[in-house]
Amino acid sequence: MKNNIIQFLILALVVVSVQSCQKSTEGDSKAAAVVLPFLHEKRMQDSYIYGLGNATLVQDLPAVVAVLVDTVYGMEGGRGGRTGSDTLEIKKENWEAAPNLTKVGGSSINYCAFNKGGYKVCVGSNIVVAGPIADPGPTALEGTYKRTSNGYLLEVKKVFDGVYVLGNPGGAASVAYNPYLMYNHKSATGGDELRFPVQTDLCHGGLRLVSPTAPVALTAAEYDAYPPIISSTAPLTFQWKVFEFSSASGSAVHPDAALCNWGHTAVRTFVKQ
Image (tube, rainbow, N blue to C red; front, side, top):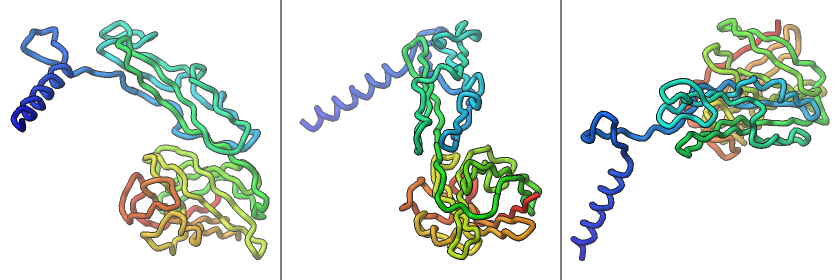
């Protein structure tokens, strides 16, 4: 009985192996793996952040949000290449469903297409709508900041009083733009108090900005006690470390290791220009 089971499993593996290959046009003795459609270029951002009532998504999306390629079957509606329809440009007006930009919270925008073999490929972005806060700090933070160690210019954009967007909080030119929300609350003494909740990073993990004195190996939620530092006396200055996590969850633990772009714990200082 045991031998029969083993023989059956071997036969099943052979059948699966044969079915997963195609005959090559060069002869019956060669096999070629099936090539599915793939994302050749994504032109939209991974995330878009807006203040409630201030969304400009239609204007912000590029006319062509992505380019898809399939050199085996061709893409429905595509053009050029080996099949005559290898390449498909996905236009911004072809989204599957419009995201809800009228309430605070997160959603997504997705685009999908099929090749002529019936295989599907999708691309999308996260959409975040932020609301105002009740206790904004007294200092207006919007403007351009220069990182002292390398001269990188960080743009801080205002969404509401006390609510801001930054695109590259690590200040490294080699890292792609990804919008993050930073809040400036009024402190107990009436001053400024920065807060940066854990948010999804470029590698779909979590990211927080924390105090230069923050220890490693805590959970993302525990870093609430270690907010980024702001010096509101001229020149306005930020200081923080960039900590990343396996997920954008309060229970995720900082591993004291590289996960995406900001694995080391250097203190980053930005001075307003």
